Length: 181
Image 1 (cartoon, rainbow, N blue to C red):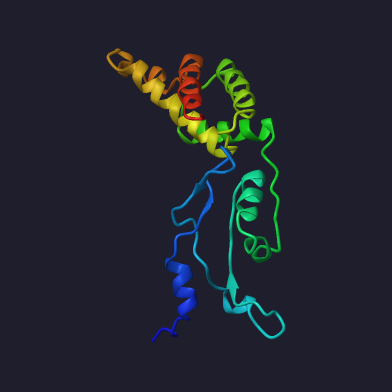
Image 2 (image 1 turned 90 degrees about the horizontal axis):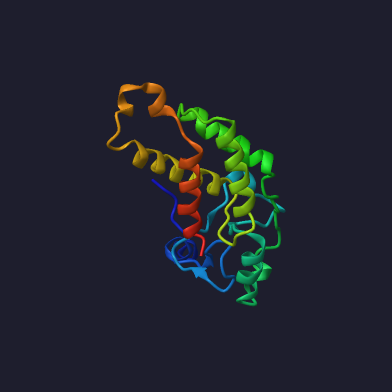
């Protein structure tokens, strides 16, 4: 039989929590359920620790500062911050390479150079989301590839079906940038 639940935890579990909606305008908050308060595993509780609940909020630094400043009681509830640096341009390309390999796609040096330039340009945009942007660029590029292949006889040539061109990436980047505003 499960242990009885604390009514305060039930409220935290079922309540909507506000959190930053990304790197966009710092005053925008996402009011859907972004996480759940819950009991710490038994190994993290115990005499002298004084911990019973874990509250976790994650986001980019500036929007998180704005979020915590939006209510004077919030800041004290998050005493520990863990800062993760953004991926470097080389690390972003490594993520791209992994996506290309996993999808068994052929993308040449010209395509990779275009990806590098597009990611560097996107990094300055408010909607840039690190590894998620790389994945979104890959998906948008694959959608552009599919549009290019529709109605062609490329299906007769496996290499053509697997080829991701610089034009595909260019269209994917253009499409993705439209979502940043």
